[in-house]
Length: 251
Image (cartoon, rainbow, N blue to C red; front, side, top):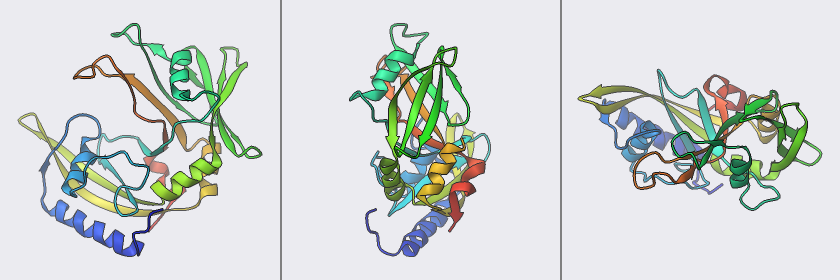
């Protein structure tokens, strides 16, 4: 992980900036659509939106959610799978995606899979397999009769360990309220809590137990300049908000 000096100093710095934003009260959203509660907060920090494989702020990953009607899952980080093909997600989309109702010649693939239960996906079943001997997490695809079709996709333990160290070792979880004034969205940022990741082995175990899941989010732009184009919002490693203390200690 990039060296930002004393983590306590970095956490205190973010806490002070949060307090300043909190004291402002209701803040007009600076973007539209999904993720605008987080984008607005980061803009208030003076941080530009980016998709870098490192933590958001001085070694601290920032996750923002609404107190009510917020997202059930927290996306910890994104990591596309390796496999026998260079563009493995594209192959998954072509093989197991579902044709879009509006753009009928194109497919989308939305699936949240885990290692405990089979997930039905467009005529197939998917499941994760944590293989300690090979130090890999495999995506297994089964037929309707639960016959194994393939296990070409995988994530190496080493890749995951590096992600944990560079992206989510320290976490700031921020809650917010939302209201509308004349159809314009406003947010009020109400609380911040800091966490430190337990360890890499705990993370792998939580995947094995089905608590951490992997989510594919490949769809089609329905409006704007990119209408009709495929987008891949990243293959996310996710955990429910209620389970955050299983992977993190309060800092």
